[in-house]
Structures are given as C-alpha cells and as structure tokens.
Image (cartoon, rainbow, N blue to C red):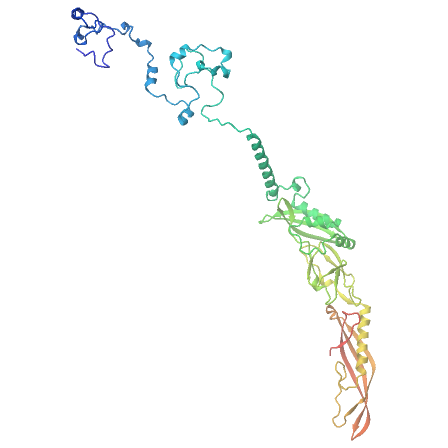
Amino acid sequence: MEDPGEPGTRPATPAWPTSAGSARSDDAASAEPGTDDTAPDAGDEDPQQFDWDSWQPDHAGDDGHRAEEVDWDSYALDTEPPEPASWREKVIGESDWARDVLLGDLESLEPLPSSAISAPEVLDREDDVPASLSRPLPASGPPWPPPGSVSHDVIHVRLAPWAPFTTGVALAIAMVLVSAAILTQTGRLGLTLSVLTGQVPTTADAVVGAYLSAISRGDSAKALSYLATRPTNPLLLTDAALRTSSAHSPLTVVRVKAGGSTLNGTQRVTATYRLGDSEVSTVFTAAFTEGQWVIRDDPGRIGVGSLRAAGIPLYIDGLEVPDTIDSLPAFPGTYELATRNPFIEFASPATIVVRSSDEAPIIGAVQLQLSPAGRQAALDAVHAAVIACLSRKELQPSGCPQNIEPNRNEPVLSQTISYSTANDAMTVSESELRLSTVIVSYTATWKLVAKVEVNGVPRDVTFPFAVSALWKVPLTTDKPSAVLAS
C-alpha cells in the first residue's frame, strides 16, 4: 500500500470519502465540549479506505484548479527568470516592453480598435501597456500593437540641434581638402587639364611636330614649353634670334614619324625638315612626363670658344656673347656672326648653321679675316717701328732689327751714327688672327754712316747691311703698334 502523503507519487486527495471509522470519530468529537468540529483528525485517517483505482482528476473539488485549467508555463515563469528577448535586455537589462503584466491583466484589457493601433498616444495609458515580449500571447487575447520600424537591438542616440550644421561644415572642409590634394597631384597622376582639354600634343610625334612648327613661326616661348629641361642660358632662344635665323634660312617641316619605344619608357621620333635649301633628317627622343609629352633633347649647341678672336667681342645675331661662355644652346637655324672690330671680321658668309641637336655645327667653315683697314693698320704700325729704329744712335738698339758689331780698335762715335733704308718690302700674315694679331714680314737694305776713331783721328765709315725681321701687330686697340718678333 503506497503512502498517500509521499509527494510526486499521486495527487493530493481533493475530498476524502466518509468511512465508518471516521464517522465514529466525528460523533465522539462532537460529544466533547470545546473541540473544533470542522477540522478532521489526521491521525484517525485510514488511507486504505480510499479507492485509488477509481479516482479521476475530474472529480477534484472546488478548493483548487483543475489540471486542464492551469497554465503550467505561466507558473514556471513565476519561479524562473525570463530569458532576455533582445540585445537591449541582454546588455543593459532594460526592455522596450513592460515585464510586470500578468495573464489576468491581459484578460481584463479591452481590445483596441484597429484605427487606434498605429497611434502612439493609445499606449500612453497605464491600462493599455502591453505585456513583455518575453511572455507568450494567448491565442484569444486582444490584438498586440505592431512593432515599430526601429530595431530594438540598436541603442538610439538623440542628436543635438547643432549636429546637422557641424556635420555640414565638416563635409565642406573635407571636400576642400580633397580638391586641393587632387589639384596638387594631377601632375603625378598624368591628368593635367592641358591634356584633357587638348591644349598640348597627346602623342610623341605630335609634340615634335608642334616644336618644329613653333620654331618656324618664331615663337620661342612655345618651342621651349615642349622641352623636358629648359636650357640655363637662353641668350639665343628668343623671338628676335628666330626672326634673324628665318631671314637667312626659314625652317619648313617636311614630315614627322613616330618610331619605336625604348626600355627606359621613351619613344624615338624621326623628323625631316628644310633649312633654306638644305634638308635635315634627325631623331628626337620624346617622353611622357607629368601628364604631357616632352622632348628630352637639347635644341642644339654652338661652341663659341672656337669662333671668338681673343680680346675681340663676339656677336651672334646682334647679341654680344660674354667672354666667360664657351657654348650656347640654339634652335635649329642659321645664325649671323660678327666682331664689330674694324680690323678683324668673319669671312663671308659670316653665318653658322645649327642643323639639329645631334649634329654639331661646322666651325671650320667659319673663318676670320683681316679687313682692309686692319691690313693697312698693320703696315702702318710696322713702318712706324722701322722709322723709330732708323733714328736710333746705337749699333744694337733694343727692339730693332740692326745688330752691328764694332771694331775694338776703331770705336764708333755714337753721335755720328745715321741709318738709311732702301728697297723696303712688307708682307702681312694672318696665321695668328685667332689671337687678334697679324705677323708682318719686313725686308730691306739698310746703310750705316758713322765716324770711327782710327789712331785718334776720326774717319768716315759707310756700312751697308740687309735687314730681315718679323713684326707682330696686335689689332685689339684703335691704334695698333708693331713689336719685333725676330
């Protein structure tokens, strides 16, 4: 026989049936004064008298809920804490819905009309607060308010009124900085406005053609803009020099053809053009640098050191070249040379041709010559030197061609020395014209007339002799003078 008081074995007896033993106990209890006739004596109960096999849960009395009337899940929720239903409940322990709503309260709530479900002010009343989302809704309960469009797992932050203004200012500053960065880096990115708008040549052969066309038009600034490196001395890279050059031999472009690329990223371009009556064919080296095609070659170069006469200014196309410069860059063309010295000049044609950057001008074709005035000045200078020597009262005067040895036993009376000349001849040599000097060869027959002392008695002596001398005449001054060379 099982013990009916053992928990979990059988349900508690909702109503014990009346037995004979219990009836006798009740009668005895009612006979005793001062006893409570409502409380049965637990010690007199006989569990063997109850028919457990015939007992059914539906026969429960009014002192408790029936099995089908009890919501066991709700009872479990009262003993165990609800599981967090959202991120907000898990992190900060708060929910957007009230937890303390019982099932009984839900039954007492009046259903909300469909037109008021979406209105937020309906939920402001205390009796309309819905139950927690962590508890299930009964199938027959009132309509539940629809969830809002905002996720409950996101923490909402209220922005200050000035936040939009600050954000706009920050965005404006960021756009200005980005624009400045783009403008400063366009050269490295190869996206210059000149290329995008077509203001500069976009191919290697186009930049060479534009370069030669600018030279032919006399536009030196435009031509220089196509060079990768501008020359340090632009003395001859001017519009005036190009006009003078074009007057001698205009440049005409014949054809320009792009060639192959090299390993260092450059491209070769073959160009053919005419300088006056002469045709020139050369090769340019082009490269794409900082967003545009440029020419890496120098324009051309003139070695002025071998053209200049020492001590005499050199002029190219009317521009004086300083003495400290030995080489000058020049565009392809013809350049006029001058000294502006009355004694030394350039032989005709007094021009030099710069054909291309890879071909040096022919300096040997340019010759210096003695002008007629220079020739006469050299002869006059030698003649003056000879007259000065003839007037000397010496047998061996310094700087003169005469060199006479006297007889030791017959001393010459110096006061009686007299020279004369005959058959004079002078020849001018231009071998040292680069030194601004000419050599004059002088020949003549001189005669010495003097008195010598013989045994204390003066005696007249006549001594003829041939003179051959070389006179050097510098032509750097306005009045040249001759110097005896030998």
